[in-house]
Image (cartoon, rainbow, N blue to C red; front, side):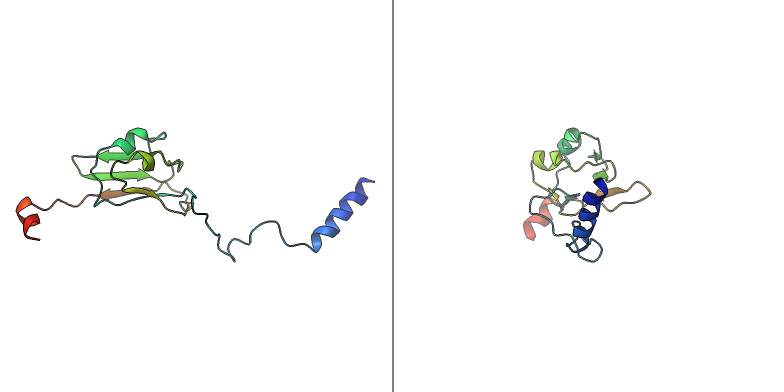
Length: 123
């Protein structure tokens, strides 16, 4: 009897649309609130380090003296804790995942030097 049930299921599946997406052929449609990899706008960042302290996996490193912000992409779990606590709102979740790779990806960003006060007044 079980063979008849399996045969009926197989025959029914032959004439239905696939249940999965045809990913390489048809690109995925991202939902508005999808959490993806972290993007930073270094011009707005004040290098306070709150994001690094709130990161549950310690994927973010902020070096205030070197003026750098570093994220280990393969260690980040895309939980959005850093985005929520950023006082300047310079961190965002981009609606894309980090691409799979065989090596650890570390992205490092350097904050541009602030213009002197005299030049800022003339601009």
